[in-house]
Image (cartoon, rainbow, N blue to C red; front, top):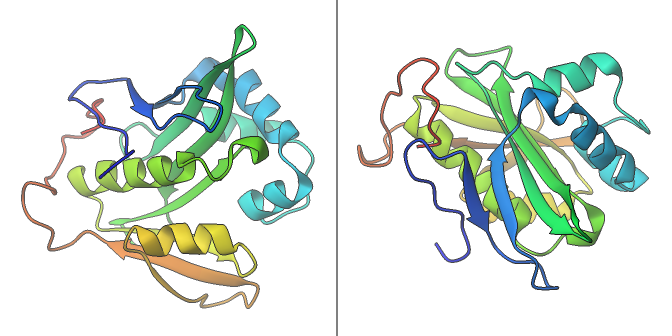
Length: 200
């Protein structure tokens, strides 16, 4: 798939598409010391982007949320950041994750956000594709996301990567997007070992 990050076993980073300004973007796992980086990323999002990501009118992450975002369950969850070098410093321009859901053992809930000035460059597509590829190869049956109805770019992105879009079962403000990995060819799906560190 053109422009999609490619991972090798054991890799910690991968290359993503370049931005319109020609700046290279890399994708890597979130690390425990990324709290300041992610806090800065969220603060820099526009109010509309923060609303679409968190479904709440927050200006910054509460400490408990920031702790959760930088300490995912390594055995069952995946958290990624998109990084770019800008004016002699490295900044976060996107983040994505899937986490344990409340309903089914094989289901994970996903969410992602891209910095406003970096939207439309393929970063969100790379992040969501990376989540799906990792999920499929590590025994996850389905990824599910709740998207605000007016978040048309996210809805279009999900549809383009094979996600079904339907009504949310409880909240009329939202749509439910989901993709099942059950029944994929064995080359695309395998049962990963618990806490396996590689991307694929």
